[in-house]
Length: 424
Image: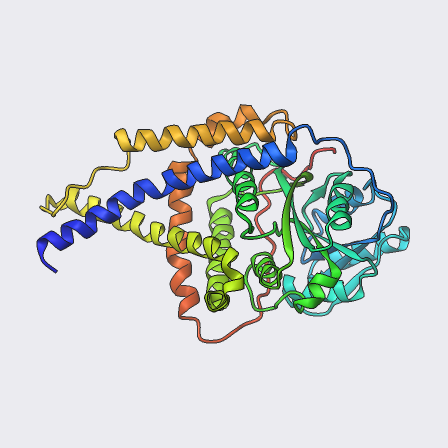
């Protein structure tokens, strides 16, 4: 390539690194506002149900002795008359199985499934679904505390709309004592919650929340339940359902409280798993481009590819700037430092701040203390963009060059420093 072509390519990449997050922030803001106006505004009264179809609450567990009691205690308080709780002990090596047995003996609602070996979350959920008695299934992580009204909000969608196959809930952060915890508190509202709102308006949701999601059992069976070789079973099951034309929804009033990583190592492991799972799903479901009926999934697919391209572009620009600055090299274009931000960075920061304020305003009704974390969430672009961009760059070759399928087993995640959950 000649100098002019190289200059044009580098300028395009530099502009893309700035313009892409700016454009997507605007899309998320507009989509989130439309969702709120149509589906949330003045709709906070619990829906009236003429009947209460049975829910089976699946709780996959692997070495959860420190948290499982609190999770089960909260599930036993759900304000819903017709449900059962099915913990699945997936080859735990601590006292998890012993604790589950104790709870099953005390409470008729609880039935326990014991797996001798660690088979992975996807396998545990599939086995739990096969023994479930309920028409609807709620999957809950073993460290999640479900709001007592969640099942009523979820049941309303299933009963009113027969094509609803899954509903994702609204996770809120429990542990907020460290900088990482505070940033993620804002992230779950300003980034994750807003994106799900906007995606629902656009037509398709990228993924249900693995922390808490509800499913129509008939829909799960129609797509063969969860696959056992996917790192993130939540993204994969979402795409399987949507490819089979089941409706997947977001219900912000179905709340659960979760622990998030509070160490850089724990955060890295979590985000790498998320990134790898996303790339796996794109690779697995690339055949959607052969079917015109799958066209509503195309925008989500394109957006994820562009996000991956942005990650590589971001680090390329950073590396070129570093080389240019350290070695005083003359390049076709002059790269500017990412910090402090110049006028383009200032515009992007302003739009991000608007996004944070809009989304926090929407979520204020679910968490009255949200605005106190506005100061901390403004650090998201500086820290989290770098971490997320790096995990994507690592995840893409890891998935593309993996030759064989392996069962996706799991390890207990970093649950942060705080171990005492809040009362609901």
